[in-house]
Image (cartoon, rainbow, N blue to C red; front, top):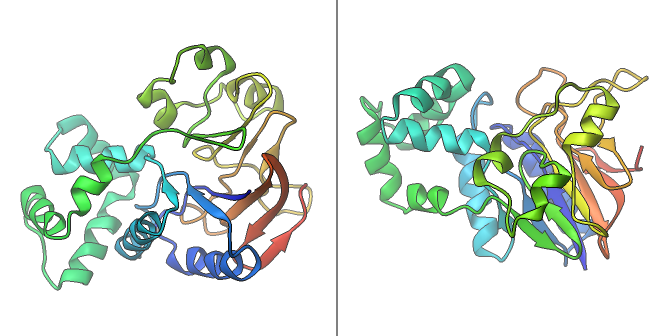
Length: 244
């Protein structure tokens, strides 16, 4: 089976839609795993979220990221998460739903009511935090090897985990996987390559895919294509790209 792991989109509908076009043309039978952080920072979060939901209705998989967690906290008037939602680019998400609806929401409750009209808030609340398929373990954030000893890693860790630094050794240590399997995550924005382009960080046991889409002016949406549980190539808004 072919799997396509898509990391953080952050409201960048143009890159997301372009990448999906390549996926549907070149890998029509693939299952897509969307690894969270669909919203915030970018200007078209509402459109991205609606499209992600439609993909799940077609049999693809979407996971919760930390930005979905913050958004739900904002809707519930959780003070800490609501504050963090605001400083993490949540204003752009609210604005995108205001543009979609033609209404300026005056409170979290009004926005929640609007989302409930189509069941979108409930859909966000029900997003899983982990997906296992074909020997690949997908989470939004990296999960260290020792935390996979549990039947299922902690939900908060799967959304919020971070490495000690972006040094390659620390990245490798933070991203674990049960023996004989592979791990894929987003969440941690990768550094520039020698050519000045942000690229995923690949290891024998896993890959970090977040290349700053929607978060950085130079950000790219880079997905990873898996065949029989093995990474075989990348996919971007511009098309297919060899593993690096």
